[in-house]
Image 1 (cartoon, protein in one colour):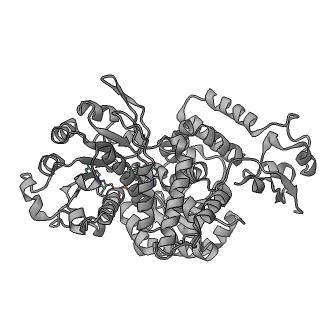
Image 2 (image 1 turned 90 degrees about the horizontal axis):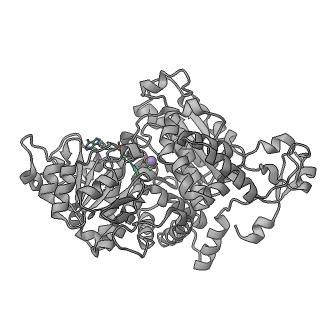
Image 3 (image 1 turned 120 degrees about the vertical axis):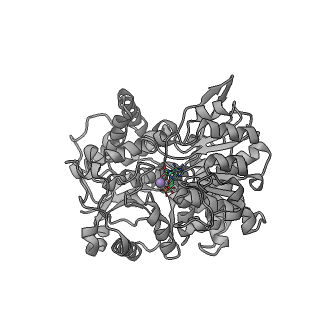
Length: 564
Ligand SMILES: NC(=O)c1ccc[n+]([C@@H]2O[C@H](COP(=O)([O-])OP(=O)(O)OC[C@H]3O[C@@H](n4cnc5c(N)ncnc54)[C@H](O)[C@@H]3O)[C@@H](O)[C@H]2O)c1
Ligand SMILES: O=C(O)C[C@H](O)C(=O)O
Ligand SMILES: [Mn+2]
């Protein structure tokens, strides 16, 4: 926020103990003498008036006293629910240390234990039983305008499956990233969980489970419910940016198709992931002195993320002048039954579109008629291996070694989350390829030392992308998220790759540079949106100013009292 603006006082209608209970407004010991007097806070706080830096030192000290990841997560969420400005000041100051605790991987465990660790309200739970009063529920959430919603139905939380309402940890974590990394004010964000039941018996049989204890609503009834939800959102906040998150495979793509031309929305697992993976791949190709068109890309896991990445890479290649067929011929989609081929039955539409020609696959077939990953590696000689299966240890030593025999520097991306579900550890991949592989992972991993070289492992996670997209959308008031905007985001990420490019250097910018990266992504995404006619037309300078205006900094503002 520009300085002049932050100096303007904020007029607020709360006072006394109630004010200290409003996380967006509470300043705790930082309330000034005058504010303490005007807002009936005298005596409610210890004598000392502190700066946000002094408060941050105290909470960081308390944070350091805690030993387990889950205790740290609970502690940080507690600060978020008491004083949001302080929470974001802490996050932005210690970004690299804090992100794995409020987001992947710890957020996975927090979702699994959501009902056990539940403390205070945050966001909205909309249960199927409430389907006829969704508009009222949305109005209960906040009187403010909502700019960004992240919504889940909790059915595919990371690679951890159905977590029911525990999935709420994900929208909360994603929106914290929007604020900490993309400067989106938390006052205008809303995490939402649609509670349509839960098909995870281990969870619903727990006495503490707080969601609806019935099997998931499916089929037409489910889609009608989501329809009612989207309609209510559009009626109340017509220009909101809505992010679909962690919906299961049978629903993720149909929901995106249904709503992508109806409101400003995107599916993060399909599109955000596609953009971060493409950006990482472009950076990796550049590192090798090659282009995307030189690669043959093998996906293990052909669901939302796998097919989302593949079709986005096809769009990149098309933009470079390749025909659709040429581009698709470089994508090899493997799922439980091996390589997807055009003769396979039961493929979903988006998988069918990426299936390889059955004749081409014939020479690679095993005795059972399928093309296993081993056979594909030998036959198609992929240069890139991307894991999006949610299966720990799926990449085997023999497969990685086979790849390394055929390709001087294979690009290996085990992207499944959380850490415990990565298809391979970077240490194994680097050892099996004798240090030749270029590796990035979905969850954070420590650097790997191998034969005297330290390999930094970049985190190829959609968190590099969606904050910048959100900032861009808000700055230029985009009405849609288009493929072109996603391509702009992935190119910006690739262009921001570190200049030092020796073996072991990270592929992506450091996490503590992500706020600057988000601004860059926002600028290019907004420019693209304008070119496509889905945003306000602005000069470069006006856009820059708008990004500055939208970009929220976790600093206290001066308050003035209005009547209750
Ligand atoms: N790094 C990131 O930013 C990022 C983004 C999105 C998803 N992911 C991760 O990717 C994983 C998958 O997400 P998704 O949305 O695509 O889920 P999804 O359920 O749509 O797809 C997973 C696919 O993997 C397949 N699969 C399972 N076991 C397999 C095996 N043994 N061999 C081959 N294929 C197998 C499934 O049949 C399914 O088609 C999750 O773990 C998720 O955390 C990471
Ligand atoms: O949440 C993440 O860390 C990335 C991604 O959206 C996922 O579902 O795994
Ligand atoms: Mn996700």
